[in-house]
Amino acid sequence: MFETVLSPEVIAAKAAGAPIVALESTIITHGMPYPQNLETARLVEDTVRQNGAVPATIAVLNGVLKVGLTEDELEALAQLENAAKLSRADLAACLATKGNGATTVAATMIAARHAGIDVFATGGIGGVHQGAEQSFDISADLQELAQTAVTVVAAGAKAILDIPKTLEVLETLGVPVIAFGQDEVPAFWSRGSGLKAPLRMDTAKEIAQAQLMRTALSVPGGQLVANPVPLDAEISQADMQPIIAQAQAEAAAQGVSGKAVTPFLLQRIFELTQGASLDTNIALVLNNARLAAEIAAEMGHLRASNS
Ligand code: PSU
Ligand code: MN
Image (tube, rainbow, N blue to C red; front, side, top):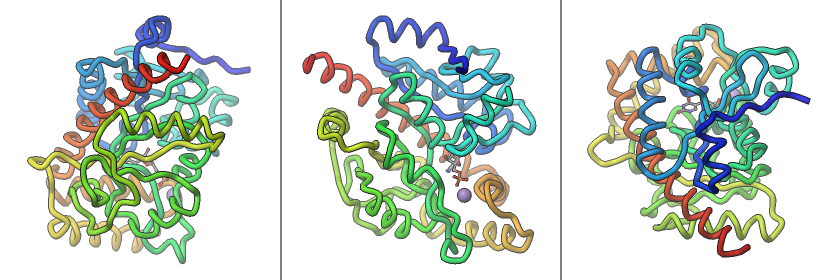
């Protein structure tokens, strides 16, 4: 039907039964400015490797579903202007029309499952936007977590979202939200949100077991692991709050809507913090890549001992 191309590194990892960590690409094309996006993408891949797993950055290039990008492909993607932002609704259409696009959390989960990859690391997931009671803006990432069996490691949801409503929707959809090593849900740039996490786990092994047991129970879907940003990279909620409010006010005043909302807010917050938000973003993605590599390794051990 369509062409899926695995990178040589991913092919070798699959043949050896080695752990693989999927990585999204919307964070590269729409989440960070060039050239920090390319530098970060490389650093994230290297962090996965240093922690004993193989990275599989996912994107659509000329209508081909790429699972793992070569160095040249990564560089081309990071500089691609007008790359489509592909979520569940767009992925098949982009393949059919031979387009180029970067995958969101939702589309990366679909591609990862298709390629037999269990674990995926990113920065933040999409969720329920503030004012969703008016705009109905709720990310397709939440539905995807409910139906696609991939464990997603993120640093929680950004405070540009309505975090309590995001947690409520995840609960309704039956998505496990697991805080790693603490009781509170982390809030992306900040370790705390003031909200108690529905679940807490302290080891990669428990997280891997929980995913496999969910699947064994025939409950579809994945799980969200909320991994707090490292202490030395944190920006407090008090510092972030006025900046987020300003970015949101500008988005509303300019009539930004739909898929453009998240990229607009991220870019404005980057500018308003003079880049500090980006440093924190990079630190937390690397931290998530480390944990995801550990979970992928545990998943491999468990699968081997169960078979
Ligand atoms: N949140 C971030 N950084 C990001 C995104 C979300 O902190 O780069 C990206 C992810 O790819 C996520 C997508 O899946 O935005 C969600 O977009 P939407 O809200 O339009 O579903
Ligand atoms: Mn949206």
